[in-house]
Image (tube, rainbow, N blue to C red):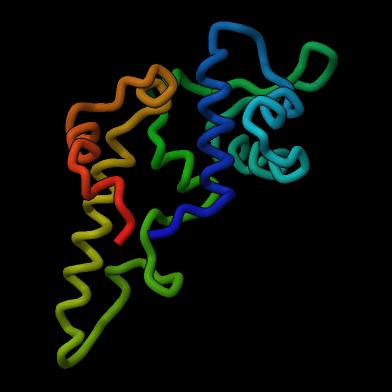
Length: 152
């Protein structure tokens, strides 16, 4: 599975906004600098997040960006979907729209199972969870096996 730079930057920007939720809006430049994200790339991401209803923007000297909802109610999946589309696709196609024949027929349930597990994790973790370093216990448990940290 691959997480795009766009999705990674979007989640990091959203986390920066979540961490400063009690303050005023953050300027894109401040988010870019804090998270080491190219500013122009971040502007496009923030616009997608605004159109997707995740952030609000305000112009002017006191302007900037802030989350449109409490960070507890925005999942990591919400952010990724807004900037990248479906969480899991095969050749750009959502798994239920695929069909296979012969020995490959069992691939479809495999892709569906993968999508289900990705959804379970990313929909079950909010921006608030990550920003507070309090991941849900079931997610933390997945990281406790040594195999989780080793590339095959």
